[in-house]
Image 1 (cartoon, rainbow, N blue to C red):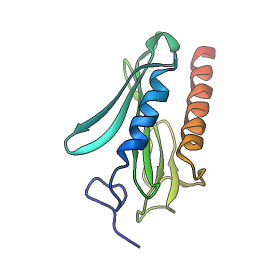
Image 2 (cartoon, rainbow, N blue to C red; image 1 turned 180 degrees about the vertical axis):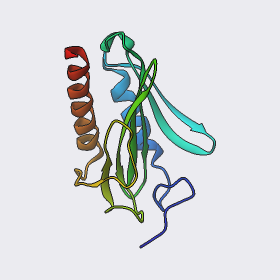
Image 3 (cartoon, helix red, strand yellow; image 1 turned 30 degrees about the vertical axis):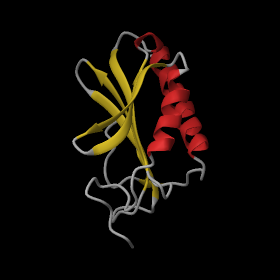
Length: 144
């Protein structure tokens, strides 16, 4: 097994063109308030702030952070900030000592180790899956 890079991700470099493609697509949706490719602390990623109007008032902020690597590994973190807690989960594909390469860190705390999983090969299909799961979460929030 190849050890992960210093960011806990993949041994491959970040795939900036895929992040920029996803940025363009996500910014075009009403679900997204802002999508920005950033290089915070030397970690290139797509930071997506989801539209506050999409969520009930109990959610202060919701974000999706994506890192996509040139070998199709990825780390996708979803986080909701509430007044008294955070609710988060993570979809990952990368070498690691705690799970298979494809795995999921379930809500509400995204613990490690996570659960072994299987994700689509194409980045567009992965993001569609994430957005569908986020949509299910938003539906649950509105019904509470």
